[in-house]
Length: 454
Image 1: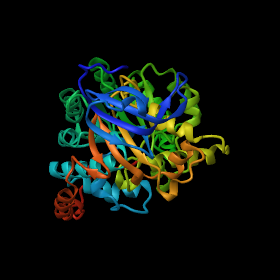
Image 2: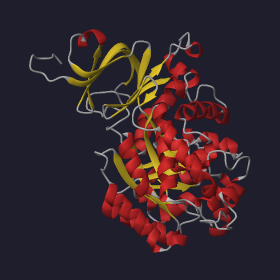
Image 3: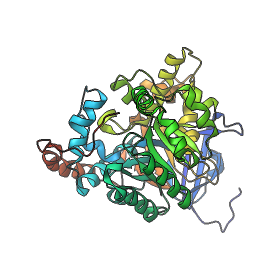
Image 4: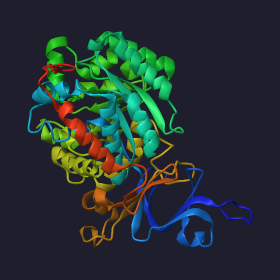
């Protein structure tokens, strides 16, 4: 593109950086000493740094020594659960749910959800996460936080069958009411909790609603091998088979975790009529001592994208997708017994293109390329722990940290610049949340919102 004398200024120009690229075969590469020109919230041009000299722009960022990546996507989390970070430690899954998390969640107020979501957005922005898929309660309180923070999100109001028809109806009402809000940065999903808390009738009704309204479904399924074995023992089918027979696999579905997916499930996932994806959050699986992990290689072999996730901070203790990327690569090498899988470039592919596909944003984000929304993070690789750089992909996956993110941009708007948050007041959020914690964490009432018994 050659600028003309009457060309309006760009919204943002980032110059001097190395840009992560994808070729026609979706292979990851890097373009050095590059510039990214942003107009109207989208990438208009990726060119050489010298080509933008003298151009007019509302904002400039000199990014020498930094790498420009598509913003990371947290494909499955429960953002407000940062308020429960560290509350339920060193417990098996059943006790974690029944003795701590579900009793505490019976105390949740709308304000608790707002404050938790606000703190989570601040944490993710600082870690270079520009989009997250949230599956939780009180989504009417989360959506305004997404709007004010400037982030992008796929939001779904979670429900159990124990709530009666009202739970499913509220999930649909939220999805229809907030689709495309926050200037288009919010997309929505129906969010049944899981096959062990939502019965077949509700799952089938959810699938019908999803098809009728063009909505995706985001739920937990086959989270661990115990759930799969319990489902087989009690019902004669796996959780994935439940999704198939209720029609959920005929919708666009995002499955959280899937460490309990077994070989007999793979043909069902491969033949699914909708867009099927799985989100993996490996740190939590290690904490719960689950014996298996998401079968990334098997899923990739059948064309099912696997996006990176953290789950909620109550189980993972952080919302750090950088850590998820490194752990996914390392754990996959271990379980496959093959150091050549999952490579650093493959891990970056999961963090970018595959994660975007998982949340239904393929072609919208995940590439720094003309026509894509300008969701961009700048990573500083000048620190001693990232030098020298022999293999840039390996440095990004295995040496860089969330704290190396210097700048975070969503839709062309700078949300953090030189580590300074511009859209979230963290001290005030932490202060108010701290005042509310005694009431939130009280378990003396003996209530719980559900019982974990798979």
